[in-house]
Amino acid sequence: MKAVILAGGHGTRGRPFTDYIPKAMIPIHGKPLIAHIVRYLSSFKIIDGIIILADFDGLGKQIERYFENQKIAGKPLKFIQDSQSGTGGDLVHLEKMLGKNAEFLLWFVDNLTPIDIKNMFQFHIKQNTLATIATRRYRKEETGYAIVEDGIVVEFREKPMIKLEMAECLGVYILNSKILKIIKLKKTRRKALNLSYDILQSLSKEGKISAYDIGKSPWIDVDSPSRVEREKELVSVIIKKLGS
Image (cartoon, rainbow, N blue to C red; front, side, top):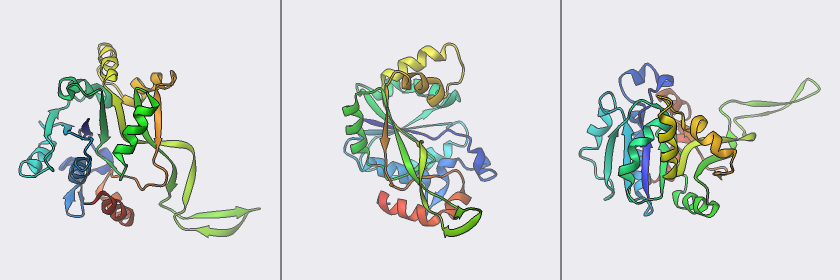
C-alpha cells in the first residue's frame, strides 16, 4: 500500500512563519514535522512507498531539498506537484502512481499521531467500505474546566480528558482507489473539491465510510510553531511513541 502525504496547504493559521516555510517544515525536536511522519510510515511493512503531494514550484521545494540526502528506511519516496484544486481535486494525479494497489493511505501533514496503520488497514478491509477515516471521541483540553452546581464552582479540573458528543474527524484516511474515479467525474464540473464535503459526504449517506476510533491515543494538529510550543508535553509524548 502506498502512503500519500498531503503537504500543499497554505498554512494560514501558522502565519507569518508559513509565509516563508511550509507547514510541513515546522521544526519539532530538531527535525521538520514531515520528517517524523515519513520515518513513522516507513516503519510499517504494509507501506511499500511514500508519495508527497505539495506545491514544489513554491515553498514546497524546501521539502524536496530536505529529503535529497535523507535515507528513508529503503522505502521509495516520490514527489508530485499539486494542482491547487482542493484536498479532493489534487488526488486525481495519483492514479498512475498507485499501481495495482486497491487501497492507499492518505495523511494530512499537520496531523501528528502514533496511529497503528496496520490495525487501521485490517479494520478497513474487514469493514469493506470505500473509505476509512481515523476518528476520536476523547480529547485532552488545552484549558482548565470548572464543575458548577447551582451557580457555585465545586471543583476545578486542569486540562481534563473529555468525551466528545460527536466523533472528531482526524486527517488520516485509508481510501479505495475507486474514489479517484468519483473525483474525476466531479472535477469536470468544479475546479476545486474538498475531500470530506464534496466526495465523502455523499458516500457516507450510502454507508460506504467507516470510522476507525483511535481511542485515547494522543493526536495534535500542528498548525503553527506556537501550537508546538504550547503543547510541548503532548508533542513529546507523541514523538516518543512515533519512535523518532
